[in-house]
Length: 192
Image (tube, rainbow, N blue to C red; front, side, top):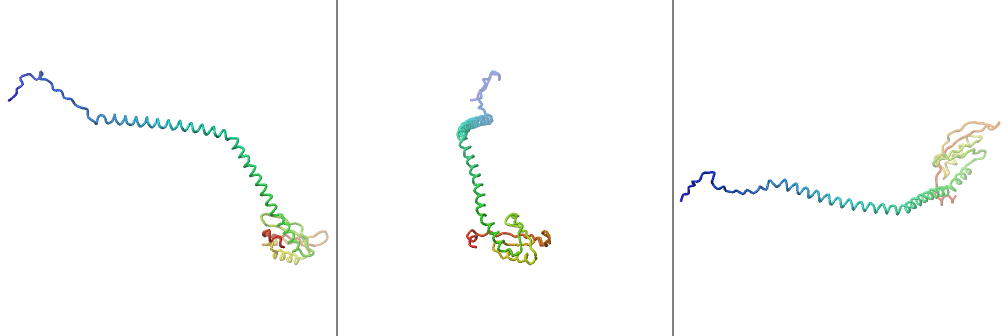
């Protein structure tokens, strides 16, 4: 059967179309809501961490204040220990060199020929020494330098100055020589 609508168009019953919103329309709102939730959660977590760290800092500062006298005492004791060790090092160096210079002087005395006099024996740095003296002959200076060179206590002996001079009316030869001292083990130092 055929249906014919005789009513005018305006009077036709209107059909209701229910349109559901599209999912794409809510996507930006959902992203914003998720971002707000993430930011709020992060802020809450960071706030908890900051407050926990502030509590830890306060506890550590209190501990530091409580330990400050002990720390000051430890620093003072370390300074005293360093001063004491410095003093002990000086004493050790003096004790180590106590007989060394005595052996050097003894060796110079043994090497000294007759009619020669030493006027100066000087430490010029490190293990280098300078010797000054007077004599009547260049041969005596040569003998002296040869004896010092053959000594186990000296090495690198060099004549630096040999010049004519006078002591009163007597003509002499003044000389200067440098030598490097050889440190020997303490046991060997006492053997001879």
